[in-house]
Each structure stands twice: as structure tokens, then as C-alpha cells.
Image (cartoon, rainbow over all chains, first blue to last red; front, side, top):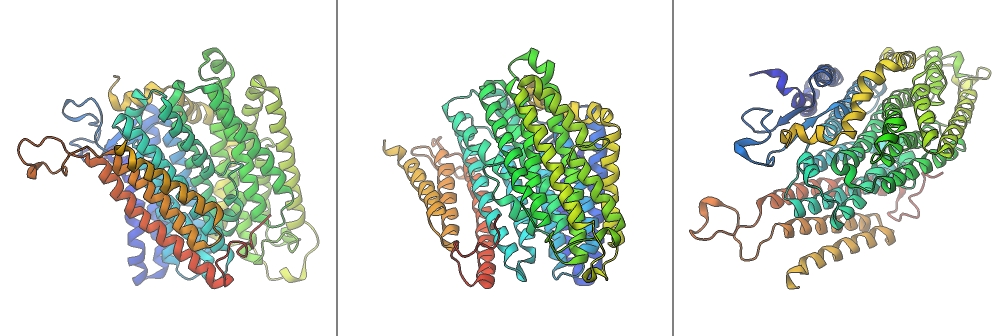
Length: 521
Length: 116
């Protein structure tokens, strides 16, 4: 047995197993639960990196459940795949890397952050299940299996958002909102699965993609899938759950939730690019995505400026940054049927959008963690009550500056790299879009200057006399994210060439995705 | 025409569910709305696999000469979806319970501490 063929399933199975071990271990030793979680997630992280290297050198990997060999997609001469399978290509593994890094650092950060709460074992169990759901959504090659993992991720994240609901009302309220949103989106995804199955008798993404005709029913399925996946990704006008859920969840969970929203975003791109590709009216659908992106960018940032709750403010910025990704990829989709424009600026726009996904996960994760550090030491999220914290929390201040500079798109941080790619390519598609994107970026900077001023600057306040630097595990998680941000900012070419470009090409070239399963039919 | 009746029922189920979600203000009723949509989708899936005059898809117990069977895959999908639905409903109701404990009401107009 060659173990390296089983890596895709091990990445999902190890956290899943650990999720059910954690409650058992907590009977023996409460402290061990966090360590077990961190260990399981670090194994997943290492395996993801190994798999990434393999995929980027060899090509997409498939893992078929229950087959004689994991790569046997078409057993006994069948023309279509009948088994559930995982299909991991450059785009999936790109998202997988984000999930692995974010969940691992979230677990490390939680070691100190969550200590004082009750029910720590349940917290870690749910964190692992959320990670499993995200990995599953990103790796699966089966549309029904996608629904199952979507539900696993939603149920775990709802329970985590309302984790403090025992003591406070607001987390329960936020959890209820998110539950309704995710139930509706999951059920609509299931309805679309039914429509596909009724027409083509297939559930496999790749096999569906090879026969899809863009009939009237396919249009209905697309009309169901795009809004609900955009809703799960937190795009305006379906963003009402984002500020509530992001602000009420514990800080490390908020960071992972950002990555979970991006998993839905990934699914949206997968559906549009790998499933439909050029059978679509790409210009119309591209513009729909661009308009979602524009609305998210602009409304997100304008709502953020007036917020007083630090995490709520950052949550609105998360909505706004999602707009950049939708804008970049939407432009790529709009010119998909036009090879010249695609080569000219479409690919660059998509590279910007996809690169921004990873950058956003890193700097927004860092910002949420600093907000969590402030809450951990001061016990408040209200910006009007904070002040002068730079005197007490030196490291947190530095990390916040790095994160804020990255989100505002200042060089040499990673936000600048992806935003520049988006600006210059989108300008050639439609200059107005690019100008709006730049204005939003300036507003973002203004808003973070306000946060920095009111939270960190100013004289020492008497009520924060006891405040000191956060514990070591929290500093470690933030430091790693800061290093990643600076590294990406200094060497963007390296990342774009080796990680982002293959991911974009695997989205654009539909045949590469279907061929892996159907053997070049 | 008569064969399309289940699809009409699907539309009614989902329509009622969406109506409940949009116009009812009680958290428990919202949970019921979700369950209605879910039932509609499950009915849709199971109807897709139905064949007229077919038997259950168990090969070993099929009478000889009987060739038509209903499709097993939609049934498996529906079963999975029902199990997930139970988990979702339980979670919605337990969160609603927590909300009631803190706010003393299930009225959505009064459960509004998060805004802006």
C-alpha cells in the first residue's frame, strides 16, 4: 500500500478522528484537549503542504472511495464515475493551504484564549469539525458530497458562534441568523443537485461538466447556486449575517469563519468555471459577479466607517474585501469567451482575485486576532472605551499596524501585491471599476487609522493599569501570520508564479479538471 | 398531468416555507419554515427517482421478470439529507431556546440587540 496516494483523505480523516477523540480525552485531562487539537491540525498542515508539492509538480490528484485503487475513477469499463471521489487540483489545494494554516494557528491561539471558558472540549471538537467541513468543501469532486460538507461546516460554525450564548444573548442571536442563512443556502444547493441529477443522472462535478448543456433547467440551477453561495461568502446584498456572526464568535473562530466563507467563494468559482465554463453567457454572469463585488466593496467599507465595535468594524471590512475577490474573478469570467482579452488582462485579473483570497485570509485573520487580544486583556470591544493600549501591548500594536497596512494595500505588505494586480488589469476592462476599487482602498485606510488612533494611541488610561501583553501562544499565532504577510509582500512574484497561476489555470481550463476523472474523453 | 402532482406539492412546500421565513415573526415558526423547505427538497429528490409500476431496488428479492426498479441513488441522498435536517432543526431549536432564556421572548422584533 502506497500511503502517499491516500493523503487527500488523510487530511480530512485525521481532524475528523481527533474531533471525536477530544471529548474522550477531556475525561482524563482537560489540558490535553487543546494539545491534541493542535497536533491533529499540524499533521493536516504538513500533509497539505506535501500534497501541494505533489499536485504542483505532478498534476491533479483523485481519491476514489471504496475502489480497488484510489485513482481508479472509471471501474470495469464504465463511461461515467459512480463512486464518491475527492478531486484535488491546484485551486483546491490553494484553498486547502489557507484552511490548514488558518485552522492550525486558530487552535494555537485558542490554547490561551479559550482557557477561562467552560466546555473547552466541545469547543475544540467543533473547531476540528469546522476544519473538516472546510477541507471537504474544497477537496470534494462530488456535488452531493459538497452539500454534506457544507452542512458539517455550517453546523459546527453555528455552534461555535453561539459558544458564549450560555452567558450572553447576542452570540445566540448571531448564531440563529447564521443558522437560517446556512440552512437555506444548503437546501438550495441540494435542490440544484436534484435538478442536475434529474437531467444527467450524475453527481460528479467533472462528469457533469463534460455533459452540461446550459438548458433552461441548468439556468435555474445556476440561478439557485450563485446567490446562495455568494450569500454564504458574505457578499452584499446578502451580507446581513456577516457582522453579527464575525463579531460575536470568539476571535480565533472568526478567523476560521473568514476562511469558511472563502470556501463558499471557492465553490462559487468552481461551479461557474469548472462546471459551466464557456457554456455560460460569460459576459452576463461575469457582470453579475462584478456587481456583487462592487456592492460588497462599497457598502462594506461605508458601513465599516461608522462602527464603534472593533470586531464589527473589521467584519464589515471583510465584506468589503470579499468584493475585491469577486471583482477580480468576475472580470476574468466576463472575458472568458474572448481568448485575446483573457490572455491580455483576464488572467491577471483572476490572479489578483485569487491571490487576494489568500492575502485576505492572512491579514484579516491577523486583525481579528489582534481584536481578540484587545478583548482578552481589556474585556471590551467598544472603541470609545479603549485608548492608550500601545503603552501596555507592544507586540499587539506592531501586529495591528502590519495587518492594517496590509488591508489598506500599502507596500511592502501582501494586500498591495494583489490589489495592484486587480487595479491594473481591471482598468483595462473598465476604468471606472478600478477607480472605485482604489477609492474603497483609501476609505479602508481611513477607517483603520481611526481604529489605531482610538485603541492604541493616547495617554495611559487608569482602568487599563493591569493590562499586559497577551500570553505566548497568542503572540506566536499573530507573529506567524505577520511573517507570512511580510513574506508575501516582499516576494509576490514567487507566490503568484508557483501557487496562484496554476490555480487560475486550473479554473480556466475546464478540460484539465474533467480529464483527470474521465481520462481525457 | 397526474404524474406531475408531486412536483406541484414540492412547489407548495417550498413556497410555504419561504412565506413563513419572510412574514412570520416567531423564531419557532421560522424553524418550521426551514423544515418545510427541507421537506419540499426531500420530496423533490425522491420524486426524481420514481418510476411508474416499479419495485424497491433490491436485486436479490426482485421477482423474476420484473425489470423496473426505482432509482436507489435519490433515496440515499434523501436519507442523508433527512439525517442532516434533524441535526439542523435540533440546533435551530436549541439556539432559539438560548435566545428565549436571555431575551424572554421569541419575537424577532424584540430580539434585536445586534444592529448597525
